[in-house]
Length: 282
Image (cartoon, rainbow, N blue to C red; front, side, top):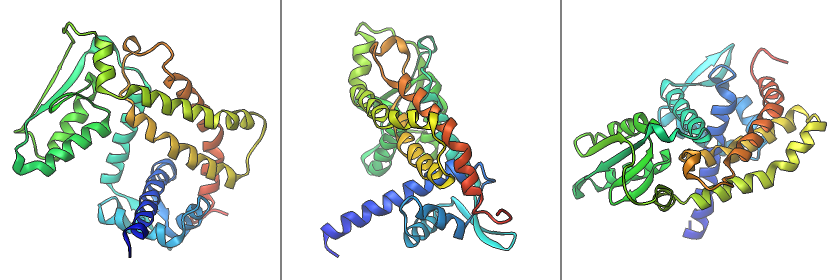
């Protein structure tokens, strides 16, 4: 296989895994933390994934400790493990916190680390993990987030066994540099704001349509999984900074409101459609 051929395959694998993870969090959890493999394949085919792609993604997630084989009512399937449930719950926590602005009076969490060159891979992993959690890079090996992210930072450091090389502080800002300027230089907040604006532009017509139209179960399921999949990436980039330090026209509140309206309209019929692919339903 050439490099050019491998790239689309790799992209397809990432898309399949991302879609399956969205499916696990948005559909499988509320339906009892278990899925029938045949039903899951049928449902995910409706959003454009073929059976081999789904099986490959499921196999990899099982290998990563997310899924356990389990038969229910004579139907082969997979149950979410404690690892999966904990990770998905942690993701929910980040998404929720990112949507709710922090209180400026609560202060900031600062992570500073000095990981030796011999552990370079773990150093890169920690940087990636902190970035994924919504920390901003304020200087060399110095990362910042609202104080409520302390527990998440401690977990990241502990999971990589870097406790001896990292220090975590929580406190207020007392510097002379303008705090808003400091924070805008620590995150690409303009790009985050633009991503929220793009979400609003892409889904406003759908929200208006759903006010007057009831989608079929299948259409609701496909649309719901797409909306959640597109949304879930955004809050992970958003550190949930206090309103006091953001531009007056910060677009996150409008995007959050729109997303919640879409979920209210789509979630119930989407889950009803999905549950019809579970054993014991018609």
